[in-house]
Image 1 (cartoon, helix red, strand yellow):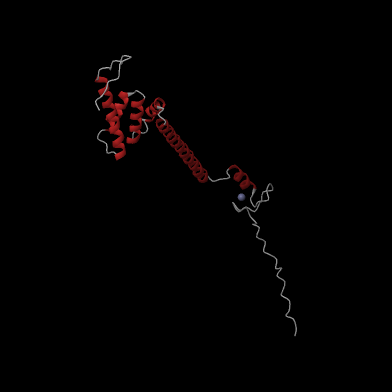
Image 2: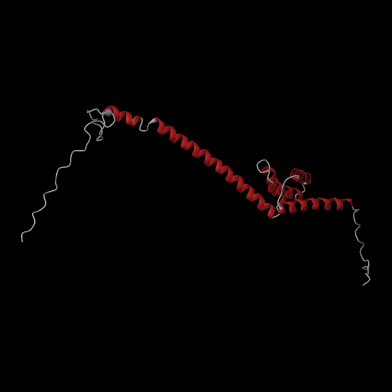
Length: 184
Ligand SMILES: [Zn+2]
């Protein structure tokens, strides 16, 4: 038994794939300043304008869009944060601070919930007229059950206050009076 003959050597020389002319314009005079296959004028112009104009324009547009969207979302983020902080103030019954903040927010947020927040903060911080105005703005709006409850509570508070103001001021009880006995 004889061994099969060895395979022929695979060391066939690879064809020279290096370009033999400038890849940009086809000139056969390569630049001596670079090992890249470009001629000298092309090398110089590629350094000056490494990106075609449309690429630059597109990138610029993307950057502008990105920046404006970032600043917009920052604005919205801050507005949302501000609103959340103000709502917290109201929850903690820091009415004066809450009222001042809500007043500033009314230009941006005029939804039913924020108007109710504003009216509550206004009522509780002594800004009764502003609170009443906010409630007037709400009239005729379609509201949720909870919003209706809050609205009616405020109206009720206003009415109670008016009733109290109409009542004569109770005289202070004199000292050393025997307590009134109630019949069992
Ligand atoms: Zn060239």
